[in-house]
Amino acid sequence: MSVQAINAERQIWVYTQMLRIREFEEHVKRTFTEHPGVIRGHTHLADGAEGSIVGSLCHFRAGDAALATYRCHGYPLALGSDPKAMMAEIYGRVVGLCKGLGVGAGIPHAAGAAWAAQIRKKAEVVYCFFGDGASKQGAFHETLNIASLWKLPVIFVMENNGYNVVTTSEQEDANAANGEPLAVKAKAYSMPGVTVDGADPLAVYAAVGTAVERARAGAGPTLVESKVYRLSAHGNIIAPPGVPLHYPEHEAITVFGKREEYEAALRGDPVPRFRATLIKGGVLSAAKADELGAQVAKEMDAAVSFAVNSPFPKLESALENVYA
Ligand SMILES: Cc1ncc(C[n+]2csc(CCOP(=O)(O)OP(=O)(O)O)c2C)c(N)n1
Ligand SMILES: [Mg+2]
Image 1: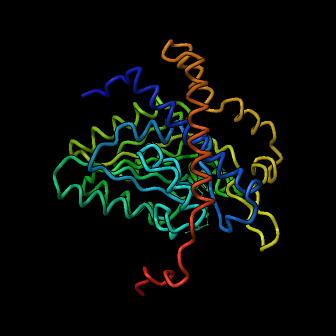
Image 2: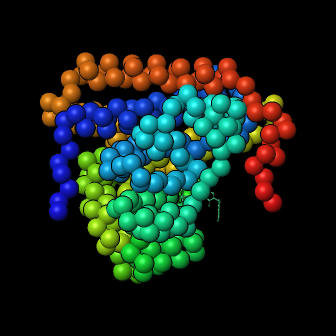
């Protein structure tokens, strides 16, 4: 079996989802200046990873599952969640996707979901997204071992953005420090490990497609290292009440003084890059691309208005989902 080439209509869908993710993240970011003090918590943006997210999820079909980290706005957007409900969740409103009580998840849970899929025997797969930093946790290694041993249908997509908050991969990762791709970690658990340019959705589509075929066929997991560059700082600054929350500059600049690295990343921005690819390939006209951009901006403006004008959960509801 080989991965089918992606048709023009699907390529436009990919570009549209990339734009939606970017615009959603830009709106979250702007919130801190346009509605200061409204979001009191931490937000982490996926700008820069759009091509990787959408290229991966192109293969998603009913019954599959996807798990993410705190940098998690892109996946549900591409999979069809309502951006209004998502924005309301970030604003902590009762009409949010998780009723304003959103929490995170993790790598071992993906193995559990994949085990359930294996038992159901419907060729369903699990997409497990996580960062390069997360691959230093014991849970990552335990999960890869059991997933390979039991041939669980899971695709481990490591979004390697080269940073773990304020440290670089080279400072934290033995493979990176020795100039090796992080995909070599797969070798220790006898599964395929591939490295792909995460800024190129079509390259990610191909790499993840091969992994999905393997998983659906019962042959087990794959580790896909998708190289991306996060275009915002790790997260917004958490400040005491009264002090405006904001996004600082990227750690490449604030911690390492590597302004040129960051500017090069901006020049390689995957969203305009894919737009140019589609226009050059005759898949999309510049006018149509602009039209899509305007539509998506309006969609996300509406999401912010909805969130700002929605009620908070009742104080008493804070204990409703606490079991221990
Ligand atoms: C077990 C554990 N150790 C440390 C932390 C603190 N921490 C939060 S995010 C983060 C960096 C994660 O980096 P990475 O997985 O590469 O994700 P990225 O933010 O780059 O997308 C760390 C160390 C944590 N949340 N959990
Ligand atoms: Mg990282």
